[in-house]
Length: 116
Image (cartoon, rainbow, N blue to C red):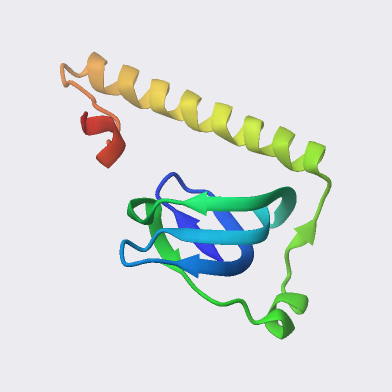
């Protein structure tokens, strides 16, 4: 399992790694989590630049079977993800409006990608 800087979670078979932590995953799936539900999108062979890797680990399949997450279809999880993103955007807009009414300037949390 690989967790990337942009928040994506990839699960696959590690086929190669180099001195820069560049990875090649085989039979890769992208797992999207929303609440207690998740969906898997098949991606195939995936090449990942080492600078994008936040976390790399091995999955214990016996513990995964006992997980309380519900597996749903791709369409359902993508719709749930869209709704979640819209909800977050609305919260950010409300927060910005609240701060502006009080004479403060609000800037959303920025990450390393937003600085360039």
